[in-house]
Image (tube, rainbow, N blue to C red; front, top):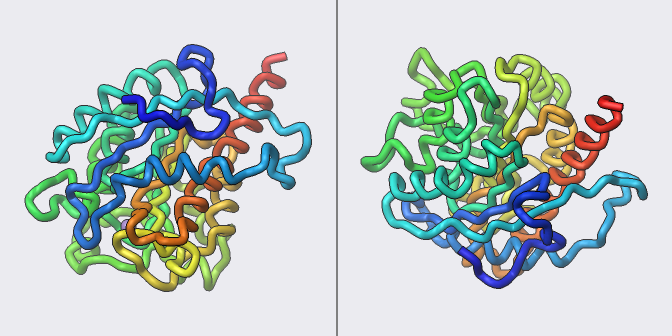
Length: 293
Ligand SMILES: [Mn+2]
């Protein structure tokens, strides 16, 4: 599972780590452009771009201890990928570590959510798509089925897709439509009014945030398999991570497709979003220590 290059500063052992990073180099259900399997490498490489501190988080920001687990083994069938991710990631989640995944395609989020207890987390996705199909091209574990599989496990009232702007008719013409906030609503009503309300409405308190990078406008994140115009700005995603704040229980960035990203800018954004989640985790950990004293 080792591949030679850790995520920047992810030098902690598993035992001492607050957070564990792992790659899921999987893209076999990709419906348009494949290549996301390469992103765990390019995002790690991009992580060396950044300075030690983010200005807005302050000079005394608490940096969590991070362990880089390497990548999950590669499989062809989504069901095999799901078993592998559960095997690799399940122990970290059960040990109370903060999981951070680098996809691979979005189906990699399914086994991560399934590794939590059904009352442990809500799932918020940032995604151009609702990904709520029962099955797609013959498998219930396609990247087009992510929120539906999550709802099976944690309940429809603990799932919300944010930034949605492309759906299939069959996803909306049913009684159990996956809750969502469209990109259009965010633009019209502002983040507080749209996403803030949705976060308040989630049943399970802690929140796993999954960023399908196609939720972000292709002007900022062109390197993805299914680009969809009229998306969120990177700053919106940063703000949403901050709004989730002390409820944040895990994070992933999926669907970065390096062959479609010649400048590498989408991998850079992916790494920066991981760092943002780590900054919020660091703040949460420090607040928890303080509360205990
Ligand atoms: Mn998507």
